[in-house]
Image (cartoon, rainbow, N blue to C red; front, side, top):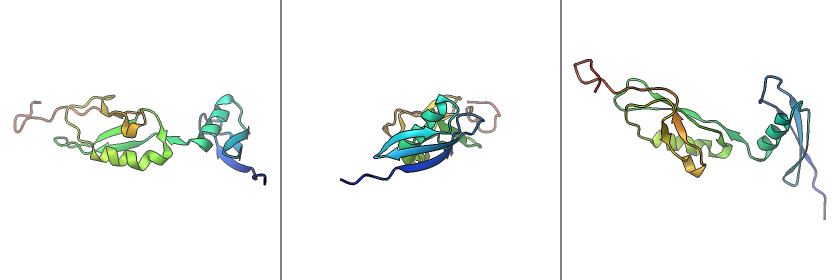
Length: 134
């Protein structure tokens, strides 16, 4: 049986301002070594980034009755390969006023266990001609 050649990947850690240059050795689908990190967070980041990269998703939703879009984000990171599907789900979402920061707009997006939440307030639309809120 032939031995597989280790894959060495270089990353820059984004967990703190240090920006450690990491070298991650991957062999047979497993991280064998992480070098260059100053702290344990760098080791954890490297392992996660190589084996299961995740990202936060931010987007805008057009809301009927509002002159401004609603900004939203995932509460935590989702798998990187699900980003475009997440954006499609957000785009298909229909939101009603009023909306408050932190309101869950899309629960458990794509079965990831992560909610999409509002990142701004959008009040009720004003009544026609009165200038008062509904």
